[in-house]
Length: 136
Image (tube, rainbow, N blue to C red; front, side):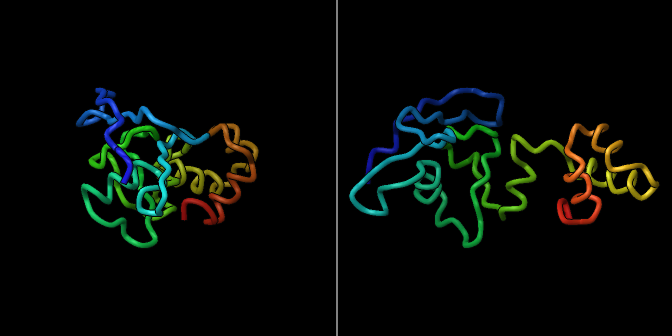
């Protein structure tokens, strides 16, 4: 098993310090390690989660609650389904309340283009939300 202690603890405004990975990172900012076997290779946050908190439940992803991909602190990781992880993501532009408001506005007859302008989203995204294909 590779050394997984190559991080620095930094206060980034979360309940506890982020453990910022100082080693190799992929193009998306996740810490990575190599190794000769599958147990010692992969994403550092996943390896440390397993080491400190146990196996990652099937059909789940680890959501960084601190919104920092280079953080490897297992206390900042929450196993959730893909849909929940996407909704919580740092790039998520709308909240559940926004989705409700979008459906309401469309139901009241406001055009897709008008609603898209209000929320800064593409009209096709508004249509998918209004039709229940997103944020169902």
